[in-house]
Length: 255
Image (cartoon, rainbow, N blue to C red; front, top):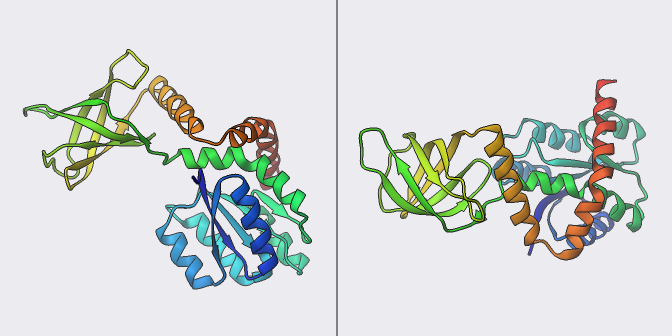
């Protein structure tokens, strides 16, 4: 089972084979794309946790990296570049990515860098990770009867619930629920964002810092529980390397 999803943009068959294999070793599912129009379509319509761009594509690689920075879906994706034959092109794009692979790229180097970045990729995946869970939920609406239902899944941003009551899109509500393994009831100001086929989408509008931290911690534990054991070890070992790499990248950007 894939724990995250990556878009690999390259026309080099060797690079495609090397990186696809290394990504799958970490349970990251690679989607390979060799042409600019298809890359644009995917980045516009699909969410990826990581983006790997081959700078051998030159101008096209710049278009892709700029698109990612502007993409509502993918602007927070972890970005990697694979150096091209033109040193000036590689230098120009270094500040647009977090990690750079230098050609030729030994398999050991690919694995080492991906493992160092894995914690960040998991954090990106957790932003929209929806944990399947069935718990009682009560929806309160001003001046109307409460709606009692059950959750389908929950994420950092909200939850989906199962109900036959067709609440209006954009309606503000309050939701009451208790997270599994917790005793304290939650009350969250929320908004209905969709309703279809007996399911309702709810977006949290205001959670306290304590609630946000608790929900993130709970989701992180649930996410790691479904990861292969070797992936969990990789994530834990990669924490310090990740923090160091990000700090260096931020310092470089300021310079």
